[in-house]
Length: 58
Image (cartoon, rainbow, N blue to C red; front, side, top):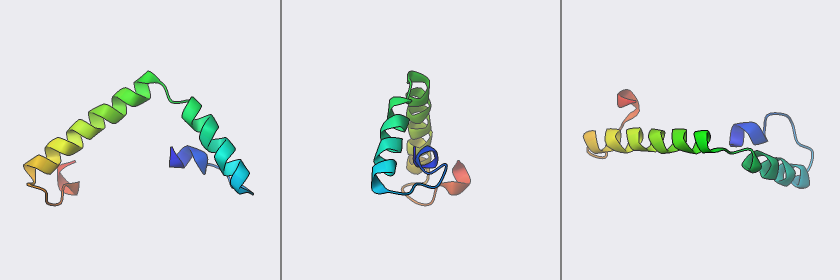
């Protein structure tokens, strides 16, 4: 989301808000499924690492 909002330079807070709204409207079911799948992978890695660092497990 952040990557899409700040893809190009924005001149004002109003432009940031408008870009955020446009980006949020573009979220689809496939994106949400990928977020869910990634959350599961990260949660399982965290459990496996017993709450420690997980970067090496991802």
